[in-house]
Image (cartoon, rainbow, N blue to C red; front, top):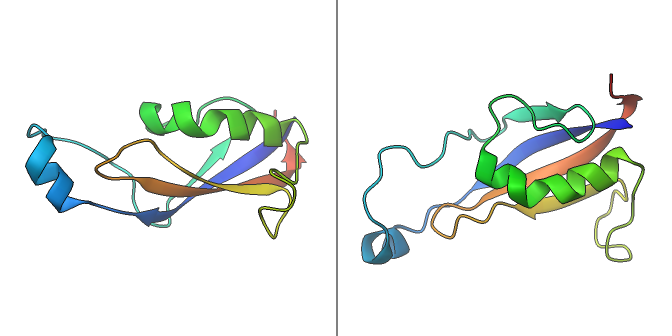
Length: 104
């Protein structure tokens, strides 16, 4: 299996939707722009959001096992994917890239 780099590329925040629909919460998301996580094969990296992992993990699993060219040429780098978490109020976009090194 290959390691997969997961980089936080964009963090959005829809204040209008939060104001209208969300109950106040103390801590919504701890991701930081530019933050990089390394998935050791299919294993969730330490400190990575559980909810975001539910969304990105199928792509991480596929990339770690050699998958490429998702959706017939969707990405310029065929060993990558741009995936956003499922938070409708604060979606985070992640760039997933297969690394050349194998997972331990």
